Length: 171
Image (cartoon, helix red, strand yellow):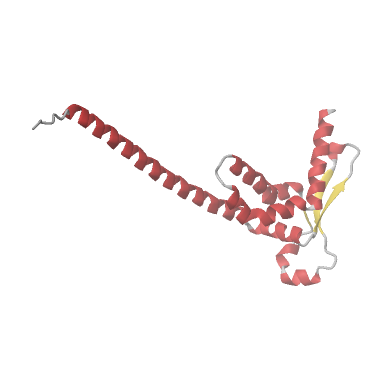
């Protein structure tokens, strides 16, 4: 019978390499779990920040088509001021149902940006950066994105901004 010689040095090297690979794999899996939990926590915080009282009021006003974009014209395009006025015609039933909607007469573009539109910009940035995936965005925000994106008053507001930027280039 032949005696098998074991090279203990090589055996220990192989076991060390295998152990290192197992540790790397376990570390990767743990970091992935932590990353997924962090993304879930971030998504929850984003929803909380998105659905504030002010943003919900604005979404409701847009949903019922009650915000109209108006412009106070001036000689200089840069001096024009746009604002969103609440259309109060035929809203008696809504006033009783949603009294908080009508505690003011208008919203400035700055308020609309801060309370609502900036959240949509953030959604896009978080998607591009891989923080939020499309499935999450679609399931949680699809209705609101489509509502605001398709709204004619928002299109007028964004159109005014484009005109102003073009005008500034020629000054």
